Length: 218
Ligand code: DX5
Ligand code: ZN
Image 1 (spheres, rainbow, N blue to C red):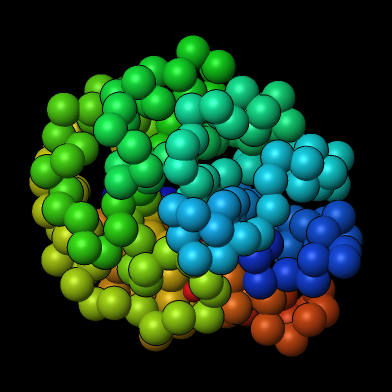
Image 2 (image 1 turned 45 degrees about the horizontal axis):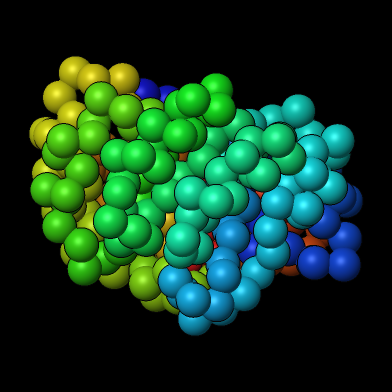
């Protein structure tokens, strides 16, 4: 099995102090930094854009995992690549040309991810798996942090593990990941766990370190 990575979502951090917050989760022992980009159109909330990726880039040398919940998406891929994203994830539901979006990410020299909403069947990624480095399975409906984990993702994770076979593709789970739900998805075969509220609760580097360690142990 692949080692578990923990990717705190800065959507749950203090927006007035992105740099310090990123440095704090880095020092607290996270593996990746998860950046949730929302456009008020694909999802019913607005967060931030590539300027924030650019602004936080000097505060960490860790892998920046950019989750784009935006439509259309192709227009903005280059901006995120230039800003310093290491991996760019697009939603399968964000447009009619998933294959084109994934090709564009690879052409920019970045790792590519494809995300599925809770209601989307995994079959939509079958013919693009050769262009994908990571599959992100949403365990909440995207748009907000702090929502309740949807257990249907556990069976879906098992199915995606089967589809992937021996390809070198990570499986990420995003939404409602806590010490209670992390073991369920890890057991099903997910290896990258995004956590927003469960990491940033407490508001200090000591609590972030403890929160990350507790999820890892779970
Ligand atoms: C939801 C985002 C998630 C979210 C996770 O649209 O993609 O990354 O911030 O937050 P928690 O861990 O609080 O559910
Ligand atoms: Zn996310």
